[in-house]
Image (cartoon, rainbow, N blue to C red):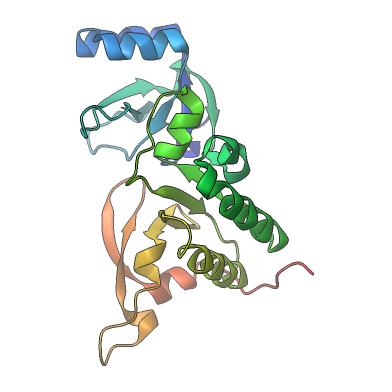
Length: 230
């Protein structure tokens, strides 16, 4: 079993029979969740609730949209009852199932990120369509991109790539700093308020335990200076 601290938001987990029994009992075994179990689709790790036990992991089941609604079931399971655990999907994994108009742009983004030593991941609708084969993507869908910079040069390079492609692709997503402090990258690049230093402006940060406001500078200090690969 992984240590509970190894589970992070957007990770994928496959449940054991013991976990499924607890989940189905807590919801009265709705048909949607029974199908999820039968197809052996993963759940998604979510933020920890304040009352969750130390040995439990909070998870969600993001169902396919129904009449513009997005049914979701949230649950908690014991870490020892998780059969398989992995990080969010790599971007290149989902390119083939993306709409044709997105594929060239996503492939270019993936290749440019690799050259900068950056591994881009995806979550949300694109990831769930790949994992389940169900219809998640629609005309207003976004591509939720996740990346973890390890030094400030990677952060700058990753943001430049996302800004370059956002004109052609409907992208959203998060930067995840060390300590799993996640910031929406579109918020990060917003100009500072008049008279305010860009790095001292506060941005919304999500982690496994909640939401807070922190300055960009405090997050930049979590990253070492470094050089991109040649």
